[in-house]
Length: 311
Ligand code: ASP
Image (cartoon, rainbow, N blue to C red; front, side):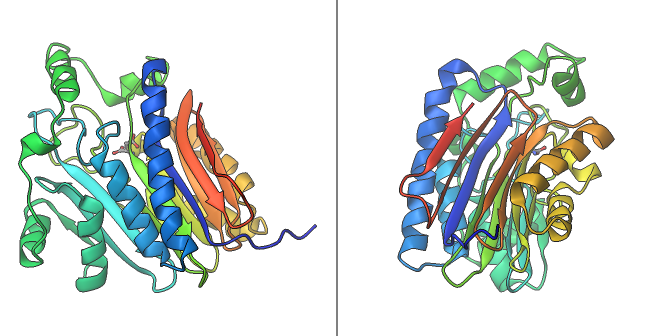
């Protein structure tokens, strides 16, 4: 049976990992607020790019998540952020990697998408572009949480700590909290975005999947949009976001099937863990993850109330 179109539509995530019981409420409230802000934009006819940016800003400013304020520290005790955004109609994209002192890297990514001929700017180049476009800088202390300082101090006493082991040996216990959003507006334009502080104690300059178009983020309004979260090195190996889009192009546009198959590929080919949110060109949603929990929320024009889940 052919399903009716249900856009505008919005789906967001706040990371896939073993979210502790005592952090579930904060995750729930965070994604609830972000969904509300993004949905208000879409409902009144606003663009999917605005909805994605504004939803992600809420999550970057919420220290519950590993994005913007509250991000993990790298092995030098610094905060380096990655983000990306893609417009599925114009096929333009913008991204930043390993950028410091920027509270909302998703907004800087959008500026790069709209005002630069390039797609991805890293480190000092991204800061230079931010300065030229009058994006405010923040101090590292503005992004730093005592929770993360304590985590970092603890990890300095574990010289053998590795992300790979945290994922594989410790029952998928690598903390996460990357955020992402995919929206389709009334005009049928799909936009996807992702923002993260990366993985705890990462090597300085390490870039994960989140700012890489095709790995952490992808949007093509003629097929759908995807944002991912999880172990970035594995996501990059299977070009996760674009892989899910390609599956959807071949399975008749079924986002649930594409999300599930994407996670199976991640698992089988790269022994990876994580989650994906998917939106197809009709505004239907698919979500899949192979971690103990994933924070996710969505709403479409066919729904009275949103679905918000952290389980
Ligand atoms: N994918 C992110 C990274 O590897 C982390 C995450 O989603 O938890 O940087």
